[in-house]
Length: 127
Image 1 (cartoon, rainbow, N blue to C red):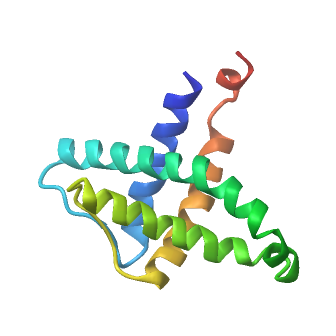
Image 2: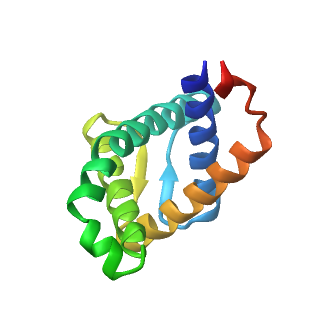
Image 3: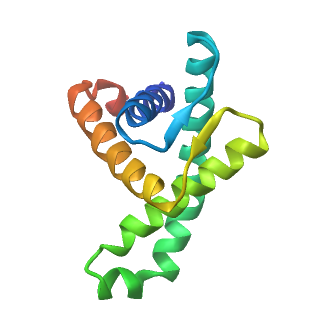
């Protein structure tokens, strides 16, 4: 149950990101296709972050220390671009126009996901 809630939170955060950040877009034809695309991209984003982020943190820990954690912003942007690339390979209508759109998109995604997670009761985490 927690996985599904996390997936929906990420999809909502992704939708809000497409509204706020120029260069991040879902180009679906209707609402149902857009919602399914957002869920699929949220799943891709979650898998990319779950698999690659810990590996990058281990191998890039020196960069994290030298930049006082600011390197994480670059890593998040690159993971967002990787999500865009995987979505294009799967013919999903999700597009990120370059590094800076990915940079700001990753920041907005993180903030919005966190805000939604704070608003959602955490009863599902305890079970």
